[in-house]
Image (tube, rainbow, N blue to C red):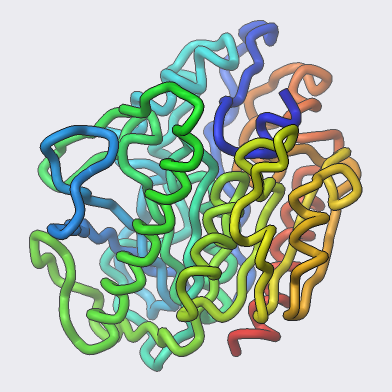
Length: 367
């Protein structure tokens, strides 16, 4: 199970032996600590040149959340939109063996929708979640980077998560097929998604509006694509590396506990592992996962030509690099049951370490 999750191409959070518990405190995330308020807006992006690989006869479309340094104003944005929150909560609840009403995923975040941008050209950091997970699971890390002055962009890879809600209330559900080659198609699709999002951000930087409904963008939003980086969890980390190999617009990247292999046993590694990069890269791992145990990371390090840093959370686990690190302990579940997934480390300390590492890395290479 641990190796499958580290590879990030299959699997889900499985806690089927955890008993139901009493009603918990409403969910919340720790506040960001940077000097800027956090504004947020969603973009609906349609790639008319590309068919959707998972649903025949449809055009590829994405939802992304853009967070930006903001001035006061706006209203708190929910963790997930109502149309996505229900299906995601139902899936997580089944895996946790609890009632879905325990997971109020529409709780308010620290980002404010409609807030005016603070102004000025801002470096950009993109985010890709793990396979089958929504873009919301990186919220605590993204809000922190945004509060420090970055424009951050979280990508939903449509038809992977349990649900993605589009304007007008339309909800697209998971539609991934099964089979031995799905992993390669999944990563290739994610790379194409990411490069399309970079194209859309270039449109914004030129003063255009790539939103399919032409909804107004925040006044003063100005992403600087000459200073762009990316990070991701699990398959999102793999996606980060593969996109960097294909697209030089990304100047620095970080992989949070994601293997760079479609198959470790067959040594079927991605290009990021077999070619390396001439740009900075951060490897973060947890528990027993590290370059010592991951052949694809060893291959990457043997080919990497740019600066590289490795950080491991020895008392963490694979989902420590998501909001589950701080959300699951709020549910009142048995700590021993959730330890295989988020470790035994103090959640606040784990999140603080991740925020500090990512902040220092991107500050050094993008600012």
